[in-house]
Structures are given as structure tokens and as C-alpha cells.
Length: 295
Image (cartoon, rainbow, N blue to C red; front, side, top):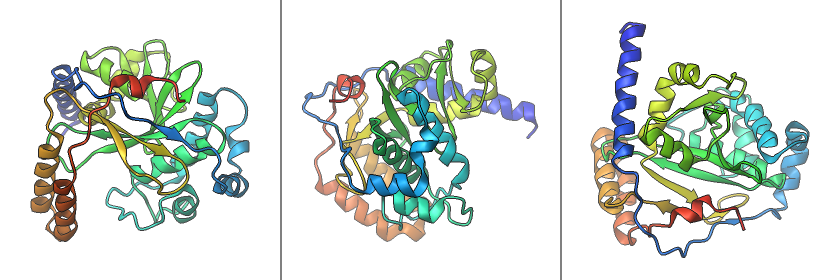
């Protein structure tokens, strides 16, 4: 495939995935009963600061500026491994010890987002993981990023797997929901690398067509961690569900697809299926829960 052919292919994917978002801009009404919590008092944070000097890395400035410095400090030093088996304890201390500057021991986006969120929380910055899920039940991929709260900019999405974030035509960083809204109407928005010039949105859109298509694919359904602190804690997520989406039916179809596609993991997939069948469907949450300042 030539570069021109690939560019056309990526543009076609972008059009398809943004079209799906266009037709699913409304979310199911939720009960408004969810609560997202943030723990800044974990004693392990002191060890995280002392061991990795993240306070010096973050430096001074706004919550957004400090978070971006942390993002750019860790992202290039963590190797991506999509099929990482999540065997390391689920916290920044253990994950950094295992993977930082060690290309032979890569980790996935779930764990990278956890590291960045904990580093931000350790410095008093509100942070949470955001789970981005695709429309198709026949898709074995999804994505996880980190959102941080800046009092001036609101919630901002940072991607520790790709070392960047989304901006609008004014070069301003955006939240997960704001990115979804702009992609749905193919508005002026694009992913950009941390050190990339962000003054020309059209140039960014042309340079990152593939990245933008990837995010459009995975922004159909959005979840955030209910509790955000050090370690495993409560790994439950709260979800924004597009109107008319049957989450349980879609998840079961996805598990069956994975069982067919990846037979070596059949036992784990069967246990996952049993777990999904035994639980009630996720309760849709209101958009306001995701956009409101943290309490």
C-alpha cells in the first residue's frame, strides 16, 4: 500500500467512525446517583514522590501544565505491549519498577493510565482513568486514557500511551466528552503530541488522521473509575451509555467474538462471560457527572 493509499484508507475509517458518533450523540438518561471520589491521602504517594522525583518533574504552574510534564516524562519511557497480562500489582510504584526504561517489559494502556493518574493524585491534582469503548461487538480493541482537572480549563484528556492530547482550533486541550462531541460533527479538533506545535489545527488534522480515526472508533461508550486512589481499590467504572445501546448484549457478543478469535484465552473469556451474566447491566449516568468539577 502506498502512502497515498494508506492516507485515503485512514480518511475513510475516520469518516465511518465519526459517522457512528454522529448518529449516537445522545446518551441514555441516568439516575444521577453516581459519585466519583478522589483519594489524596494514600501513604504510598510519599514513596512515589521520593523514589521518582515527580514533584520536581511536574514543577510549577497550572494543574494542566504540571500534568503534561508528568505525561511527557513517563510516556516515552514506557514500552507499549497490547497483550500484557496485567500480572504486576495495579499501582504506579510496582508498574514503574517493572516497566520504566525497560523495553522488554511493556505494559498496556490500562496500566499506563493508572500510573499517570496516581502520579497526578500524589501531587494534589484531580485525576481519573477514562475507558473508551468501541461501537462494534466484533472489535477486540479499546483504549484507556487519563483525565485531569484544571480549574481554568476543566477536565482535560491526556494519553500516556501516545504522549499527547487533543486540542481545538484555538490550541486548547479538551476533555474526553468534548473530543467526542467535536469528532461527531467532524469539527476542528485533532490529537497532538506533547511537543508538537498546536497553532495550525488543519495541519494537525492532516498529520493525525489515523490517530483521530482511532479515537473516534473508541469513543462510542465512555466510563470513568468510580474511585481514584492508590492501588486496586474499587475498580468499578461509571458509564455514559449512548441511547439505545444494550451494554450487556454487546459485551456478551464481544466476549464470544474474542473466544472465536483468540481460542488460547477461552477459559478466561468464559469466566468473564459468567461474571457479566451474573451482574445487572451498568446503570447509565448523566453527562453532568462527567463534566462537573470534582467534589
